[in-house]
Image (cartoon, rainbow, N blue to C red; front, side, top):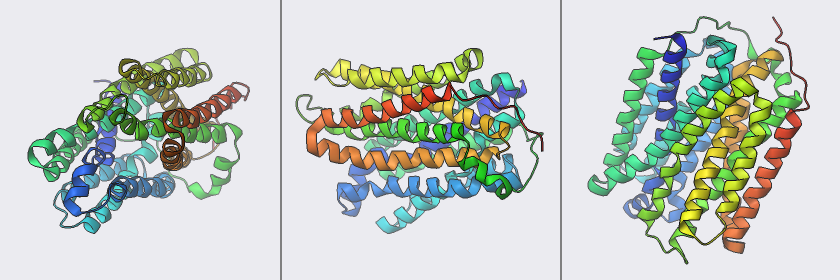
Length: 390
């Protein structure tokens, strides 16, 4: 098997594990609320503390990998996260579960911080966008499977077995990555702090950080509130039926992979604005009170979002390297902005729903998509950098 295929499959599996573990409690919130006697709002902290731990730790693991290397951090992150996932399944009380989920978010940060930097260093330049798209496709599939596996297993055996099942999936993926992922050959250790200022001053990198924050914000705003819309009039679906909306996530896996291939062929500057337009089109399709059209709109929006995120996340380390910025540090800043956008806009979406129902949520997401599209258009006017050698 070629190095590209081994690396691509390994990071696809790593993406599945990371996001299955990260989102493993989202489908279990009602059961966690009933088991531990907490409110629905309090139960959501089982997800929020994990994303908080992940987002903050990314700012540490990115620069750390510039000294220690990529593959050791990837293997350590996946192994520890799956083990912590198993301990979450036997948490004796609510506060212990929250503490373990915070720890799991911290241990998960090792992979997202370095995955795209590893791809840039180890694979031929003409495969970078394609490989990044494959990795992002794994994260999309992981996000879906984490929700669906826990829900299916928990329905028959309880939430503890649901979390244990996802942890076993994580262990399997970690073993697969251990076997498949080629060791780093082109990594050169250097102190990240000496060039950190450039990661905050390059206009293209700043635009990419903004695109990540805004596009994720729009996607989370819709995803967080759509369940409320589907369980209320005029749809009146059960919670279980509304949860089936996560089945559109494979559209993200397909979209990120295809958009990566298109970016390698036609250029990132051409593909990213198309992804923004696709996101906007899907968002508008969710407006009519028609279930089929609404689900189709979410599928189209999912495809557009993962096109944008897949191209942007793969572009960041390439642009950073060309500008003399440590790739993993820039990738960490992109992902920090990405999760910050998720947290901020996700909270605003709840207020928008309370204030003006679904049209207000769509308006909030549309503002984010429009701003993301304007930033993507601005990238077309920025000059391409020639890689610097240090």
